[in-house]
Image 1 (cartoon, helix red, strand yellow):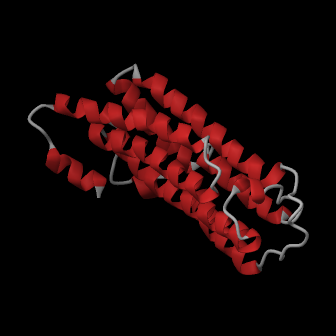
Image 2 (cartoon, rainbow, N blue to C red):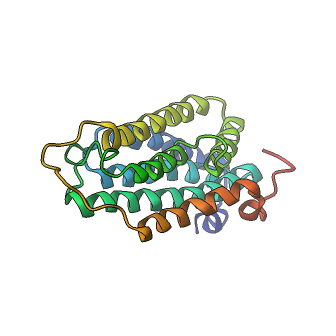
Length: 223
């Protein structure tokens, strides 16, 4: 929807886009900083999505082949990543009845296999190579740098903050000391692992052929 509507709102001068592009990029840093202060797990994941959409909006406003290809890739990649993170947060909530990370920490001891899904989801949220998230972010960051070299400072800071709060989320929920109120916990079920696998598998398949989602936007001509 963003990519379809943006060309229709083309102003008389492209310079009118500048404040909105800078606001979107600045929003990445602001929302990422808010993530570092969250104690509610679902709020952290929600703000994480807002942060990533800042890149998508900036790319859509720049309107180059590379930026549009990156926006499509990142929207699909983060759609799957955010969904699996919410699913994982819900599995924690069903067992601890709390979304507060300090009250639902150290779950690696109780749910070791679920920790693997948490690790994969957070690595994808960080856009670690060779995930499709990295492809989208690299295309967008390259396009914004080509538009203005100063944006590399803000996009670089946003990437660093994203890695920081992703590690904070993983270490808090999985690697801390188990709370004293948690004595026993229901084991994970096959349907939960199947649900996580159905989120992760498309991400892995897109690594093999990213052109499936970036086909309409060729990256051969210009940044």
